[in-house]
Image: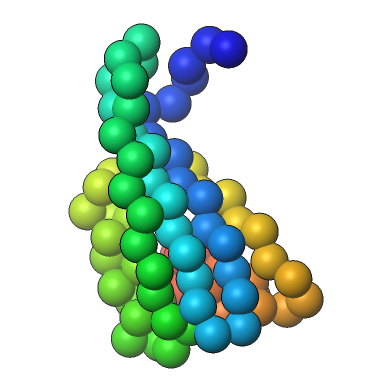
Length: 78
């Protein structure tokens, strides 16, 4: 598989928590992986947003059951 991104994040969204996995590195080299867990309360979602901006990650994918993804999308999309 060919590398095409230098940073990407996956979010696994539950009712009470968000598990975020960041994969970042230079193309062609072994990437670094970091996993963090956040609650779904607004201050924690703001911390998630700040972390995404700090890492300059522009590609985020979410997996969620039901409607739990909606407030996270609203927080991250702007």
